[in-house]
Length: 152
Image (cartoon, rainbow, N blue to C red; front, side):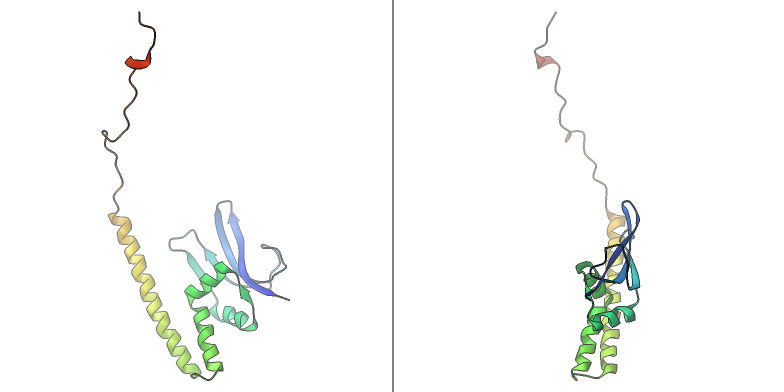
């Protein structure tokens, strides 16, 4: 039975809200699922993502395949990097405490980059000036004199 980690759409028309679920690949998009592992709201700025990393990691290690969008979400949250590090532990490249130390360092750097990006977006939004067209830039209205109408 192929298992996928994918988004399940909820919310009203043009107001999407998604559950991140583990489901049988043959089940319909919004149908039966095995386990709910998180939520994703793309309408907030920035998009809010809540995910149980341990559940997601466990399913990835069991062989569940994430969809493209969920893969990006898992990568952003560091779940795929943690899976990569734990594979290094399994191969004997380093021990488990070293893997978790590397993951915590990555997480701190990532959080710093994300907060810097949010601050930059806030500054850009505050300093953005609206575009105002001048009257001279507007196209001229056609005159009524050269219309070829009947003259009295």
